[in-house]
Image (tube, rainbow, N blue to C red; front, side, top):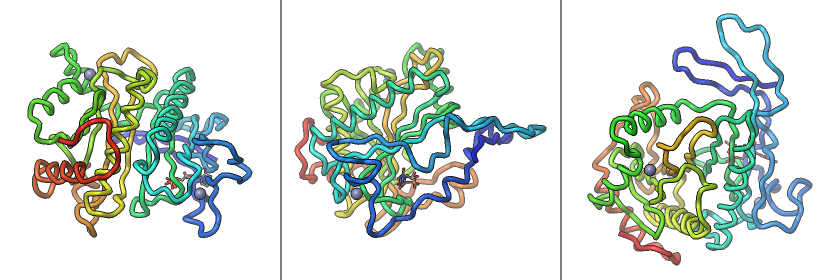
Length: 325
Ligand code: UDP
Ligand code: ZN
Ligand code: ZN
């Protein structure tokens, strides 16, 4: 049914499973995430469901027949976070702050659950939005993968953060935050506990990052006030992106926590948004140079686009707990 295959050239795992092919593609008249189905029932505000077509499963068998190529058990869990019972909500800023806080608490419970599980090395909570990115179901939802390995991109971030910490005694994320706050050029929004900015090294034309001001590694480290401000900054992020071109922005969002095992004090929780549009009608494709090398070109200058994001933040109508820059 499923297995992990190791790419010895990149030092990277591939999650292989035939069950993924069975998942429905944008069904017209049935929504599996609306209240009242066999799986969803009634009486919830936020619902965490097992993914019906999981590429990872704790009951996966150990693959056999390993010679030169390395395989491993596709152990883990994939889940869906249904963020509201309301089918027609287009993005997170359309949820009330209270509802968004409930979504944050779902993220926190998932983190708590898997942090105790020895089989899980890394938890990725993410969100795909928009048909341009291949979202198969429109009902507002995020997802999580509880992974049995630490992904390559995370390992790279960890290595650079660890090296910087060894050299300077300082967290590289705290340092980036200080730099952005000093320079002020790319900061879009700030509330009491979080800063929203376009990074100096943005890949995507309107890339946005969210850093907590306090040096924490996990969502479970956040205080109740910080959780409310995280809900606020995420609502403002999506409001900004959807105001930018006066249309819904397709994006991918990821929550980068520390791996569960090994001392990770040098690491710093953050969230990244990769918006797909470079213009109202134009998609930025990760194509030739991006796919072949993994390296990005940036058309124009990030600071110009940061100005446009700042303007969109100011223009966006939702109630905010902090200030747009
Ligand atoms: N899914 C599910 N139950 C269903 C139908 C779909 O759990 O009844 C899962 C499906 O496997 C998919 C997710 O819901 O992973 C929908 O995710 P999304 O559209 O964001 O992206 P995808 O994972 O399809 O790329
Ligand atoms: Zn629905
Ligand atoms: Zn830090």
